[in-house]
Image (tube, rainbow, N blue to C red; front, side):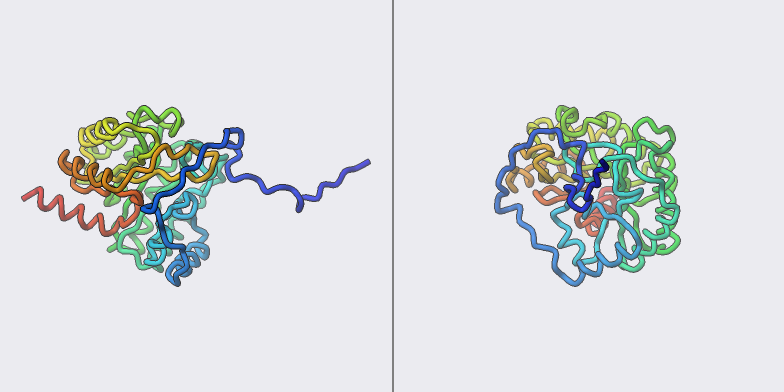
Length: 318
């Protein structure tokens, strides 16, 4: 007897099968200061259409960014290159985990074309982790930078890279392509790495940022962390000191928001006044630019912040 399976009746494959075995985590009610508008504008629809026409992914969608409505209304999107599947399974992240497909050799041109169609004066390019590639995708980042420069010579470029863990020469490839801003997020304090970011190493990420400055002291560097994951205030202040020791120019601090019950829980919603206090301390420690608020994300208002960053460096050089 042959059994025929009706695949139309099978339950959909979960987005995060690697997290399916984890117990559900509690979900705290969001406070009033974590409220955003639903994405319904014409600008949002136009941005969505351009992304789909060019076969591109965005971290705005894949990571479930709360600012997608605001940013896409202005046709500001953060490109996520090298596919939509990550080789790691960080406890905070909503991007799918698995074995990614091959790189699309036409993706750099597609990113450049979309940048031109959107009329971006400042573009942010990030990626999934690609531990399966010999250079972690550094060469692909360089190709995207080169393509955007060719199509949109006046557009400034910010990259938000993985840590390229154990990939010799990867950081050099990206820096040599000369992005205007090199961003790599520490994400959290060292004591939370084992549960929040187990595939990464805090001091390897810190060293990456330091390497960028050693290769090109004039390149702007940027990093960010999330709070609300169980960290202590003194740990956040220590991260600031570590980043300043690596000569990082720009710090972002935002509230962690839990994508699903299978992800790390929100331990605490940090009130706005604490974010303001972090901002004051960070500026006092010497950062040229600080963005610290519940809804701060690495690429939120990136273009405006880059203009402020350049102005702050010019003032400090007087």
